[in-house]
Length: 461
Image (cartoon, rainbow, N blue to C red; front, side, top):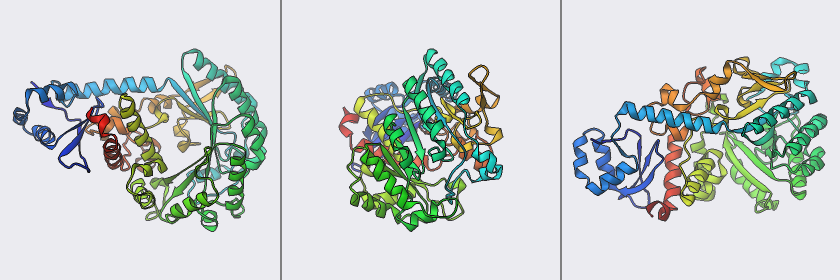
C-alpha cells in the first residue's frame, strides 16, 4: 500500500501555470508534472483515496522517484536520519582551514560582528600567531592527508590578516601552504594590500576578498580606520594595483537599509574603472547579518534580491550577485546540466563538517562567527604532539545534523537547508541546536523555479 511522502515540495511554474515542479526532499528528485498530478498528490496527503485518480503508469513513476512510498512516516524519518548521517560523514572528509595571524584590526567598521573582542584589551588584540603553532597546524594537516582526507583550502582571516606588521608570519604560513600544495585565499579589508603585492603574486593566491560598501563618503561612514579616517580611496587604489598585477580580487558589499543606493552606484563605478569583464575581478552583494543589526536597519537577502532585480531584471543572472542565491543557483544548475545528485546537505555549512578556524593563540573554533567565545571553543593546537586536541564541544558542532533539530524535523526543505546558521541561532536563541531558517524556503522556491524553467529540456528529458 502506497502513501504520499510528507517530504514532497510542490512549486507552480511561472511560464506554464498548468505545470508544476515537484521536488522530493530526501531523494532529491526534480520532475515537471501536470497540474492535475500535483493536485492528486497534494489531496492524497489528506485522503489516500485520491490516489485512485492516478494511472498505473504514473503511480509507478511516482514510486520510482520517491513521491509515493510504501514506508510509514516513522520509517521515512529513519531514512532521512540515515541519509543525513552519510552526508555528514562524507562532508568531514574535506578539510577547510581558516588561520588567523592576529585578532588585531586597523578598522572599526560600524557593523562588525567582532566588536566584542575589543573588550579583551590591546595586548590580547596585538597577539600574533607563532611559527610553532603554524608548524603544528601543518603537521596535523599532513596527518589528515595520510588518512585520506582532502585539504581543500586555507583562508587567512582576522582581525585583519594583511596588516603590514603581520607580513613575516603571513609569509611563513604561505610558504607552508606551498610546500603542502594547499590552495590559499584571504579575507582582507584591503587597506595594506599594497604592502603585500609581491607576496600575493609569489604564492598565487586563489583570491583576495575585499569589502567596499559604497562610493567615497558612503563607504567611509561604515568602514573607517581606528582613528576615524576614511578608507575608500586607499582601498580602491589597492584593488586597481592588485588587478594590474593579475591577482584575483572579489569585492563584497555588505548591504543594509542605510546603503541600498550603493548597489547601482558601485556597479557603475566598477564599469567606469574597467573592472567588469576582467577575468580576475568578481563582485557580489550580501545582506548584513540581521541578528547583529539595529532594529529597522537590517535588510533580508530576499529584499536585497529585489534590489538586484531592479539592476539586472527578473533573470537568473541576478542570482550571481548574492551569495545565498548564487550557491543554490549554481548547485541546482550543475545538477541539471550534469545529471548529478541533488545538493543535499546534513548541515548548513562547514562548521558542522570539516571546517576549522584557528586563532592566534592556537584555540580552535568551528567557524569565525564565534571567535573568542569560550563556550564555542572546540579544541586546541597541541604544540608538544603537533596535533589538534578536541574537547566536548567538538561533537556538539560537528554532529549538529538537521534531522536532530526539533524545529526542522517536519520541514520538507530540511536536507536542502541544513538547519541554517548555528552561530546566528546562538545569538537569537542562545542554542546552536535551534533552526535559523532566514527566508531559506522562499529563496529556494524562487531560485529553483527560475533555474528549472531555464533548463526545462533537462528536466523533461
